[in-house]
Length: 545
Length: 89
Image 1: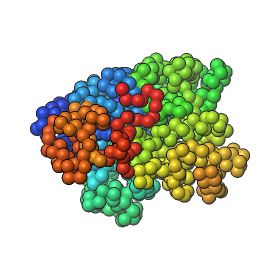
Image 2 (image 1 turned 180 degrees about the vertical axis):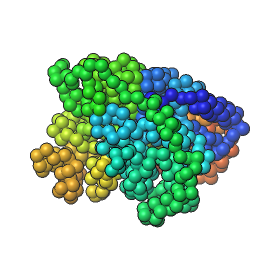
Image 3 (image 1 turned 45 degrees about the vertical axis):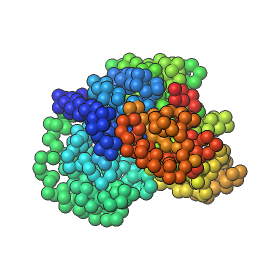
């Protein structure tokens, strides 16, 4: 895991002192809200429905024990005993007082964390495969590249006031678990014919009001050219991106307007001017960053346990992932107890995950785009001990990838942008799926819910998406079918008219039952849907509505 | 009828403006206003510094949030509807 150097520490410390002064000036009246708002947003502080919200950056989703304990302390002392993991692998605290935020940032800085660039029209927290450095299907660890991008993009003077926010994802495995096709820039690590690793470069993906899948503009970028090429892309975007219209300001609109080929041509033209300059990454620097991300090893590899207590085998089957090192496994810690709030975790649970990471997980945990946590490196002989502790903590739900593993934005229960509630809908679907005993029979399926078109809950790329809308003061929910997040990324299509909230869980359950009736043997939900088309499910959605 | 609501500067909590020009966390202590008086009071609240952030008018019907934004304002008043440990203290 990367460790701050003196420069990193100084950077974060200076920013906290600057913000402490800005908060003091706001409280004593020297700054108006209009003056203060852009300053607080640059430090991750939003004003939501009930309170301020602090969004803390978790670079490429990676956490260690002391960091998890600090998050637990913040939840306990400054919040209401819980935090909320987001689809961008950050954590949000929903109830901090403004007067406490500088002190909270102090606590974060001590464990090398901050809230910088978690808002605003800048390059946001870089995301990566949550199983990076562990996954059995990995080509190369994406974390060193994400860290290099983090350092380059932090306080980047040229890219602090872009036309709109900008999100970069890096995936180093064959399976795309970072969602590179729904990011402004997606980087896929590949090998060329000579066996050298480099990057496929995808641009113009995104969700929100105008969902678009990214398009590839380069088949192979040499690693030393990473930062110069990213700079070239951002310069083209910074120059031509629409600053006149908030809804057309993302790079996806520019890429669509120019065409990917022309956007790529302009990028290459700009790149030709700068590629041999100071942005070329020295091999020694790449090696220095890589050295922070060493692969764990085991002296004597043990097999995955085949027997154990009731429930343990099911948890292994759903929540364990194969590891690239013999004798190790990765495990998903589900933050989706049946009927719970997706992504929420209590202070005590954060402490327990910290303990498990330190004692059994090589001091590492990850946050995932599905609002779960991962222990990436667990010795096989420790799996049952870890499971026991998770059971005791209420964190052992064996539902990773199932219909109860629902992703949800905070929605109208917290968010000032939302039009409708999303968490209660997720809870009701989860409860009904469980009551009907459908999760295991249905198997892999993604259900994602949003309370507005900004799509923080990623409903566009869910097999079953739910979008809340407001119609004259009443909540209605549009159902989308056929979206997907990874290698087979696609944007779901709206099935028909919106449903009342109380009708949504039943409609989803009927869709799942229809799938069970019409699927071919061993066919996943999304494959059945693509084979028969969304219309085959339409009747099941509206039959009783 | 209308009332004026805002978020408290220090901690962001939901507050309502009283007839005495103070701020309360209780909607039943809010001043009920109508027409021009509501706009005048809002302008007054916007001009003040120190306690409230972003004051605005909400509809009140039968002593509760009303109008098209009634649910949003009801959630602001009573807290998240997500249950369990997440009810506001």
